[in-house]
Length: 478
Image (cartoon, rainbow, N blue to C red):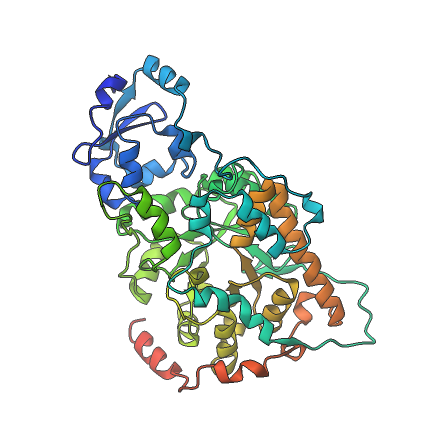
């Protein structure tokens, strides 16, 4: 029988040497987890010895406890009287503050009057908390790659045609065999409830209205079942980070297997180690207690092609997509593994290695060195999309779809579900307009003749293709 604890007993365990916490009526000993917490130890110590349910719920789903904590770390239940009194106790000023506000909420114009993703981003900066801004907006080092992700689209010209009936225009397409209403999907972005209480469920509901794809973040602030239930007409995939504790990852994969709405697994590879995101680090430094390290990176850094894919195939039968491909050689290597059905060209939104190439440049290099990749697996592009013309350029060069991450979070912050819907509608309308002006009726008609990329020729990798070496190294392991 589980023991019942008084809150006064729990409150005595509020140090790094003995750290207990109450979450949803249960008492946990998290002492051994402090050094492993991906968000750093300071936030745990701040809530040690007390009921941290409210703070926990703002960024985590309750199911995450099963992944990170073992059964013997659950010490028992909190006494009902203490739980009721603790719930009545006013939260600190910091905890009372809405996730999407840092002060009085500014009055924003109607969503319908916001005409671009950039405009929505500008209003989001007025609504988001400093914590959310430091996390969402930050990128590595000098943020060169983050800027380049969007700037590269300006160097590509569109080639409109005339005297073609463009009355009809359809954005419908398929991504990994799944029918979607448009080639724009929402990329995995962590902790959406920092932007708005609707969180990832609000994003799912907006995607549902367009029959769009949402890739659920491994670090979502809501559980996958809660997210998919909010988007009955959406298509879902799930992002996987392989943790150093592989048993915990396997427990999560077992949970994902029970959710039929999730159609494929997105294995993220572009952040085996955290980039130096200075804006994020500055904010965390202010929260760090006693000079302790602000972050313990929990992602496994020893992943390899054969070992990791064989392991993953033992734990899922779903198609596998590799996220974080940044060279044409790795794009080609992915085609050598039958379990891999798609790749996402991504540099983690400029949050990993600064001066890495933008995804669209990698797509151009695939076309130059190994165009057969585009006929073998689905290639998606993630990063820098702010206009419908950006979408069209990526599709014309062979991408099956394009992802938006920060833009969806910005929409969420200014209007919840409706704000995300507004972002998607702006991009969908702009994409359809660009297609009509190119004299294109469907996504499948877009091709390289619709774009002029000559201004980027000098930027492309000019060495040997390297495909033979990649194949030689990997074939020997297959």
